[in-house]
Amino acid sequence: MSEGAAPWPQEIRLAMTMVGSASLAVWMSGVATETSALLHASRTPGDGSGYRKLLDLLRATVRLDVLTGTSAGGIGAAGLGLAEAFKSSPGPLRDTLLTAGSLENLIRDPNEKQPRSLLDGDRFLGDLEGALRTIAAGGTTPADAPDMTLLLPGTMIDGETCATTTHSATWCATPNTACCSASPVHCGTAGSSRRSRSPRGPRPRRPARSSSRGCRSGRRTPTGCTRT
Image (cartoon, rainbow, N blue to C red; front, side):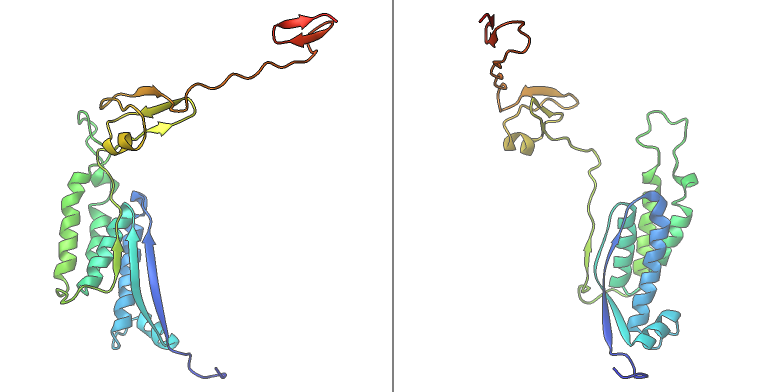
């Protein structure tokens, strides 16, 4: 390209991963909102935002191919994916996290007996659902499936423990059918831990060493020292 000529048209394709951590939830929702604004500017020629001016300068377009997130990052990824599907904005999710997602609102009552956790996620769930509905209502229902992949890993609420085999024992704290059928171990009852012998069997004994160390005179045999 000669000096002063316009740059070649280019297509920027994104694959985003939003990490977890409640402390990063608000920051991630801000990233989702700005990414949505960038994508909107890319597909809207008449947009007068700074993103559109930058894209025109670079003669570039932007599209989001893959989107994934974990824990709090998964909430941001879901909001961005929903906004892209309905051509809306994940801004309502950001606003909800700034208010309902604060530590002051999420922390449980110190006088609560046997709390399930430190933070009350059930209280936040209703606000989160309302934010997602607001995102969908702010756009239009897509006629076709969006050309984007959204991957959200799930978290087991009750948890599950499988077997761990060491050189001496195998432990299995909860009865897991797949775990027990995959390895010859004995699983205990729920809430308890039971030990079973390793399938390797007992270790072989080391053969006795034959040397003159420790014998004042003579040589060492498997039964003791013999004089020479």
